Amino acid sequence: MFEFAEVGQQIDKETYKTQLPELREALLEAQLDLFQTARFPVLILIGGIDGAGKGETVNKLNEWMDPRHIGTYAFDEQPSNEELLRPAMWRYWRAMPPKGQISIYFGSWYRALLLRHTRGEISDTELMQHMDGIVRFERMLVDEGVLLLKFWLHLSKDLQKERIEKLESSPKTRWRVTSEEKKGLKHYDDFKRAACMSLQATSLVEAPWTIVEGFDANYRNLTVGLHILKAMRERLDHPEKVPREFSVSPLLKAIDHVNPLERLDLGLKLDNKTYDTKLEQLQGKLNKLTRRPGFRKRGLICVFEGVDAAGKGGAIRRITQAIDSRIYRIIPISAPTDEELAQPYLWRFWRRIPPRGKIAIFDRSWYGRVLVERIEGFCKEYDWMRAYGEINDFEAQLVKQGYLVAKFWLQITPEEQLQRFEQRQNTPYKRFKITDEDWRNRDKWDNYQAAAHDMVDRTSTEIAPWTLVEANDKNHARIKILKTLCEMIEKSIQAA
Image 1 (cartoon, rainbow, N blue to C red):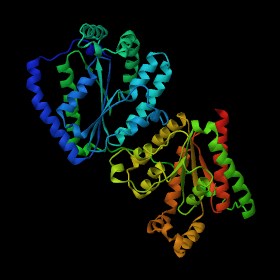
Image 2 (image 1 turned 90 degrees about the vertical axis):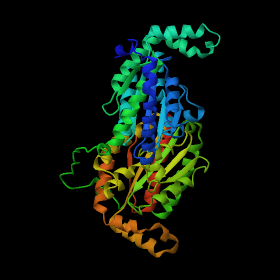
Image 3 (image 1 turned 180 degrees about the vertical axis):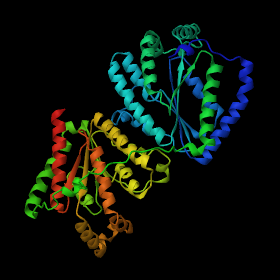
Image 4 (image 1 turned 135 degrees about the vertical axis):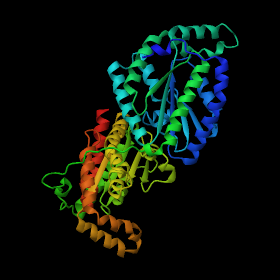
């Protein structure tokens, strides 16, 4: 794979000096067009062999373009203490560029995996499993409109050795050779093999790898600059190609026309005396569980979705009454802000993931894409169809990193909803809970029920299942939710 990056490609100084002014002017013009139109973000990944000129290339890009609109991020192999408390991808999620901006990632999500494989910490199979996850993540970025450009700067083993020896021979440059670079030379063949496997597995049609020989700085810098210019210009000059139109296979309805949500026993009730007894028991148990040392190694993410007026707020309050206010945060989700619209859809949820040992309670969530956005036409069919897989991947990452994901769908009948709507309308201190939008959504009851069925069917996984809550009776609903949470936390602590 790297044969043509080990042939000594280079450009003479005169050619470089001739082409550079035109390239710099064109890059600045493209960057200005990107900033002014703000139609998409640009994410540039710079990876490669140690000594192949990654740092010098990034410095040139910042020199040639306006650095005020470029975010440059170098990710250490060892995450910081803050990063260790969150999902592995969190540090990359939070640095994503908004539309109109450019971000450059050194190493990105590839380098640490390649180094771990080189040291024998993960096998070929495990490495490829990670690469499968990366492919799905990068496809999601591309589908969200990100212009993803990936460069691998390569250097042959002999040239890497020659470079290190040359730098070490002079007191003025000796400091530039690190112990990590020496280790890299020692394990060059293993690292190259892992890189070859990974690049082949992740070179997507939508985001291919560009392999650039790093032997000659002029060749390397000019090649990277020209590729970036071409990709940006193509996207800017042909907006009709993005987003692409896709043919989506329709979701099939059950041939008996029955929605399983309609088969829930919504007549289940709990008398007040039994409710009060169980509430006290379960809240006490929840409090103790969240104070146990084993819970501090976990994070808890609660997702509340359901029919309007189904009692999500009341259920959330019964949870928060039981736990220390210092360890939880309630996150109500409404229409995205302009800042959030400038990022991939999941970004506004990525950034709110709590550190382990803490609790995040989402009142509405990332499932809005397959519910309200689907029904109201706020996104295309392809976008909400691909969201099922993206959400499953997102939740799988959370679980793998030690988080518990508790998802509750609260279901009531149309008749019960109408009664609650009217009660809210006629009670002054509850009137804020009812809006014109709630009444409009009621007219689309069947559509929302169909969307909820598809959502549960496609995203209730073994590691993050949905709990369907019969919520016509608030006492029953609240106890079922508390009991489910206690059982989930207790099982997780015991299994640790």
